[in-house]
Image (tube, rainbow, N blue to C red):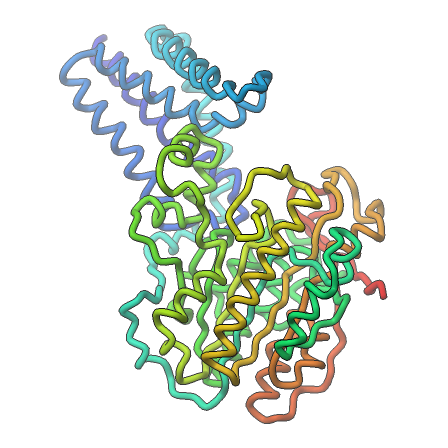
Length: 509
């Protein structure tokens, strides 16, 4: 009886430790950015630690096994720290977190003692198994397609990179900068009262061409960047309704997309500088990837989007964020700063030309930033003032990097093109597209574009589908392709009733 009792305790501990990882993947099974090697290694090590201590305790004392069971319950519940805190948030003095911690400890203690009862154990077993079965059922179609990410490694550039491996080409470098969520100058003026002298004049003084109002190919990052990589519209109003995002960004990076093939054909190397969102660096060795310099293992570990998102609502995240030195997190999201630092330390990476560098800044996207680009919690999204502050940070960073690019690589073409505009209001999850106001659609699709280089006045009018081809043809042959029509579509995320459809939108002048 004691052996059977201990075995059930052991199984319960294992289930409590592994269930949060399975539930997380089951909830996000459509999003390829959560299938990362670091996440799977974390799950294995985290669960094996409970297994190890449980096996040891089983040979020593049943009391120790109950103590480990208490920690297993605590580990499970602490992942819901933020949710419990929001539910219990009644204290204005900021002390709610301590009450939540006491609540979790108390519930864990009661649950560990109650687990001596077979009725309670069976109840917990059934609850955990049901959740696991549902999550695994969701994971089946995704696991086969994305499990290879566990084994592959990424070609990341570091300070010791041998730049002689880069091909010798005659064409100038191209820097394609994506400020996530930066709206057109017209929208910036109307929404946040950001003057044209801030959004246009400084760029024009450096030789940029910048339209006051231009639409992105799509209103959502996973679609607009898929359009960039496919060099076409991946889904239109005539396409069948899709049920997941597996064919769009970021997974499209791993499928030898048209952009990668086109750049290779024209002897361009592809350097990508990603934010945390999107799974970080691609797994394909066809890309070179830049990440921020860091000497902290904690920073390196949390430069994985899946790991960071998994812990974001947990007590662990709260403790690490408050007491460890890496409080100003998300260095990867400031991708322009990463390139800025790399140009200072390794300018030879771009010295021979023929390098296409995609810099995806998670700015002015939330979390909001001060004008000096430090992350701030002064504003609760959505906030005009928070967005305005982040826009100034974004402009300052873009001007910083454009200045050093122009100084070091004067022939380089620089494209600043956001993936979409802003949300002037909170999206209602129950609203259909026909219920959206024209203002909301206009604000969301109006993207910022500025181009310096070959035929920049015409290139600045193009969206993600045509702009790279136009610029490269201009650089290679001096005769860019004929002017193509921009198309714009409004798409949706999973929580909305129109997910899987897109609607063609005409630009408001």
